[in-house]
Length: 510
Image (cartoon, rainbow, N blue to C red; front, side):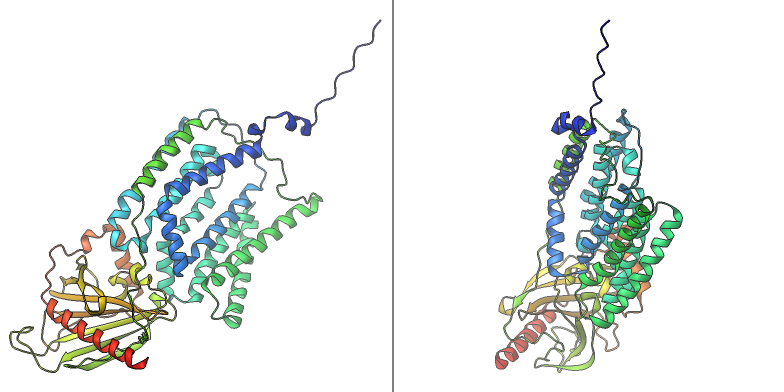
């Protein structure tokens, strides 16, 4: 009797993987889907990413963005290394419906809200909020709604990439390096809790450890390197301490079982949503739409270069005018940590019937702010710098001034005080720092007339109220649609005299 043939040995995992086509291997599939999502995101928000790069180069508060993105990645890694068995997804209809609705929301944020807040685009940056929504929709379409929601706290953290709340918090606290570091540390504590939070107890312990160590590092930075770059205050206390604690928590958790292994500590599994062809097609269509919409074009403007110009205020008073009051110099922290400003009130020596029917000497306020970050003059509108509420401002009208300088003339209507202001501003630089000069006149020619007042640091609640009003009601409520430039000649003449006086002084100093 013939003996039965022995059973063939079961194929090993290595042999099974070796026989799997390369395009079906889990790591390749994941890499392909993530690459497709990132490429489509860059294509959809090309203009947005370009303007973000410009702001990063200028050194504005938006330099917090890479650190915030790094904290979101840290939290996502912490969620990914946890052992989760998820059943496969066969019915993708819910994923497609949620993905399309979310993509429509991203399109509305980019196409409608950016135009609604156009004069305050750099401050609100709703296009970055649209980018976060687009990424969430892409994850739903390519990986499934259930896997995307497993990272729900990471998506909550990713809302920090929308910079308006961060700007409001930092400015409200005082807009110093310490304030920026404190706000970023709050985000770092939350990211650490998500990264190590396999249980609520571990999340609390991780958050407390991150808060304590980050506060110590922040205090050391203030003592050892108070003038360090803003990136140091963003990265070191928040991300550095958070990453160290997350690594320690992972090692501590794996060591008791003597199973400490390099990441990943489990096999890479294929995506639970096997079919993603329809989702990819939907994502491509909306990528094209978002790319066509684009973001507003932003061009840095530091004005005309004047060799040897003294950027620090005060301005030299031209002939025919006298200074009757001066305030400052004072720190203009909203325009940078070393920015300074000053207010001068000038009055004509002799009245002119061309500017007042009774030939009374006219008064004009001269506000000068100098900064190494000229883009901040475009980021923060007048409502941030001036203590105004409920006013309407017209769209700027270009005005040609001497020496090739281009100014902008606008009106500010205060319906509560029944006053109308004309404001003429221009920028110039000496190659190192930029100065913005604003001349303000009021239609009340009495010596006791009220001018626009600069906002004091303690008036943060009014500032937040003005920003929220703009966010919820848009720019239409703050626009003067019928501007009247009654003091055009007065302001242009004074601007020319001021410019000639400063340039003559710069030429003498060379």
